[in-house]
Length: 255
Ligand code: HEM
Image 1: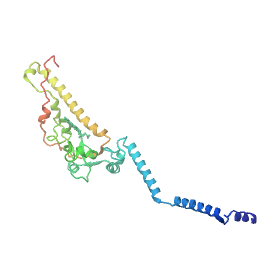
Image 2: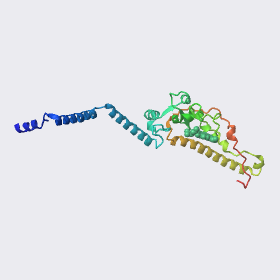
Image 3: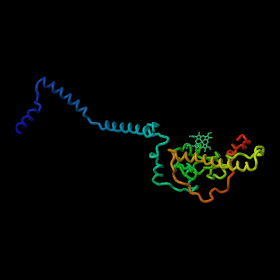
Image 4: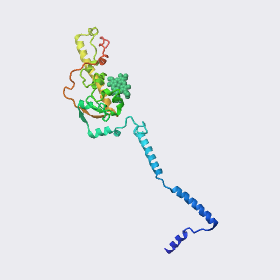
């Protein structure tokens, strides 16, 4: 123990003297001050490193999540789990709304989501405010069930969900000049077939939009529309535009 103490004591730097010593001392002093300068700790370097890391990581994550659309979270259609309204709907579960309640979600109130209904199912379409919000090309569909308009294309006149009689748009026109070539029985049977085909076309046209919203990644289901019995009211006339595509049935042999 005494020995090792002595060794330690001997290893201590010896006091130096003379010119050589002086220059050595000068050298060691200058290198020491260099080291001291390098050792000065600045928290800003670490802060800059951490911030750079988060910035790069955030850009990379945004790029990955948006499927290459944006480096800066500027996605037009962020995934559902990045949408506040999606989480609200998720935890709230499907709701029932009356047409009057639904009307309040037409986009006029910016603090509220935009809802539309199709065939009685309500969807949140806030992800596309540009199209469904005020001034948007399809704002007419917001806050309402306009299933009829979705099929007839008469957005203003048919801003309702009453599908009764829409099949008329797919029925041939009665035309004496053509129909006189058929017997009464033939005409009766033809009309029945035409009606069935027209109803199927309406079904398909509506289903196209029903599927469009149901399968959309941008929009999500909110709930269903609560309608009173007899909500359709008076039977509506087919709008002019929808009737314009109707033509007389074909002559026998030309069908
Ligand atoms: C029955 C007829 C039609 C219905 C029901 C209908 C419905 C719609 C709907 C619901 C959207 C929005 C889709 C979305 O949420 O992304 C849309 C978009 C669009 N429709 Fe139609 N549409 C019809 C006819 C037409 C016609 C005839 C044209 C062209 C003359 C047209 C042009 C467009 C365009 C350009 C967009 C994109 C809007 C945008 O992103 O700014 N549509 N349509």
